[in-house]
Length: 138
Ligand code: IDP
Image (tube, rainbow, N blue to C red; front, side, top):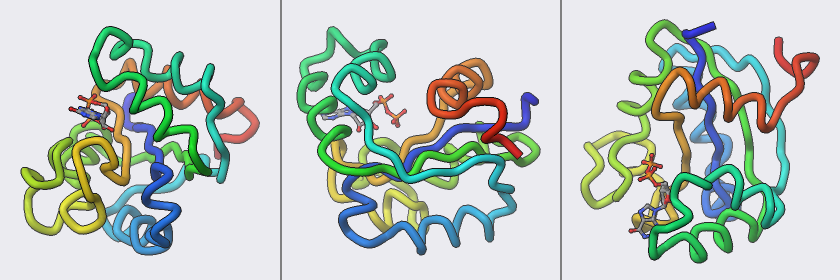
């Protein structure tokens, strides 16, 4: 169970038509899809999901962005999933993301950065359970 991470293709990634390319990159990098759906976060959802950032100056902007359209939520499995997925997506700011990473390829700014990836095994479990019930995980 510790070999799982949680991801979202954020509203910008969906709006810009990058879902297929991003999923192709994820599966080609050896991640197995355990759960996946197209969904939209409510304001309350986004405030809870990003609660750790509630004192940050960009919190309102982040909640507005994350709720403005559908996202693709998914749980992914691979050895060393959390760390390997953070490597695959690249730095938070796409201008600093390594060449070939998902954010370098598909993100426009530090706020609208195309994808989310859990930062720890503990958060991967919490975030996966936030979006999926046990019967939606395969
Ligand atoms: P991470 O997504 O790479 O783990 P965090 O620092 O946890 O980065 O920030 C969570 C999300 O908040 C980022 O992915 C991004 O969408 C947004 N964010 C982070 N820093 C800024 C900022 O300075 N301005 C606007 N949005 C930001």
